Image 1: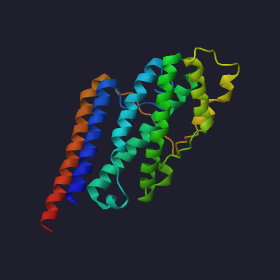
Image 2: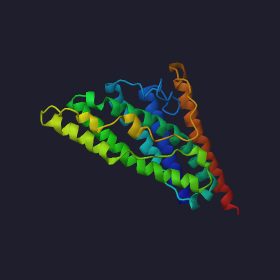
Image 3: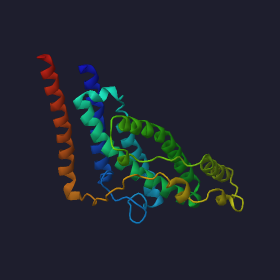
Image 4: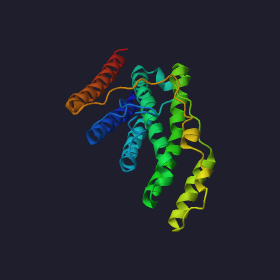
Length: 240
């Protein structure tokens, strides 16, 4: 129905708006930055900047995940097209998100109290979003997207969250963590990096400042073409 399609167009438009706003704030596209252990942008980012950047990335992922569809709704050409575009963005965004969370956890026991509090909130937010991302990927798999393109999301054990919370309690109480407290926490690498990203990812170059205006215009054009496709489909439907 036209109403249903309009609702999805609005949500898609909201995501594009969030993506543009993110780019204006950060001056880079999370979908295009380098990823991976050695030189990934969020994997190597310093603590203060990481704590400021992850919430921005979370907001963009949230806007994308508002585009909720069932497999049957994807029979609509416009909705299906937008879903595929969002799926591609989500894979890249989540790879970047995963890098940032691994980095955050590896730095956690060296943070001050305020940083630990912010980091713990960010990690809890990651766990919440993981369920929503999994649901989005289930829909993708159900409509025939190649399984090799879909990342395998493996949850870190609950003991990791418990260790993080226990450390913050020690800091909040003004007490030094007991010797070996961090040994409860093997390594962020072993517990979190199991979000194995199937299919691999090609790293792309940092988007330079000179590309900023062009990038924003391209995203606006992407939305304009999407709305035009929706309008044409609606017009065609009137004459059937």
